[in-house]
Image 1: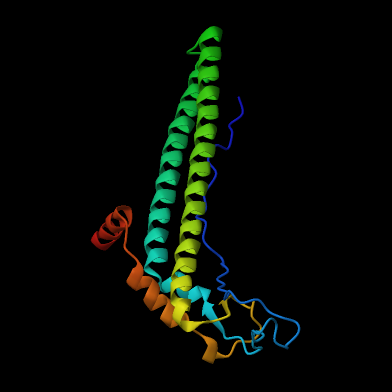
Image 2: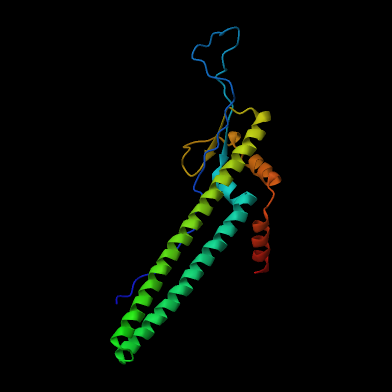
Length: 209
């Protein structure tokens, strides 16, 4: 029986970048003339941008749930690694017994089938836990995006920006710092953020270490 590679390392998913846009309700008009007695939309639309890396490193929601996902990912790896070691040891013992002629042919076949089933079960567990972890990571990403978009919708009621861009890496070739609202957004997000129970528990554990 060939020894199979059972355990595949799981990598934590992170958010690389997200779009944050907020548009006013007025529609742009090609013709600058008055339409039905109303002024056309002015061309000097207010624009701002937010540094995504700063959001990821300073927004408490991101930091808390990064710890949660890291802990769960590590628990998955530990669980699978332990089961793999147990199965590998059982396989080595089986090989030694075979060499010592400790089993009848029927016994050897039964043990071999049992080891093969344990291997298949471990692979299935790996796939299930990896899938659950991926779903949870996607849920976190969606919650992160929704929290930022909700905050910006409220924030922009007074600011009246026509466009709020996300700056991540080199996706903006040039951006004047005068249009940078990152710090205001981070302060507002953290003020509105209320940690859930899992986040509080993980943070408490992290402080003990």
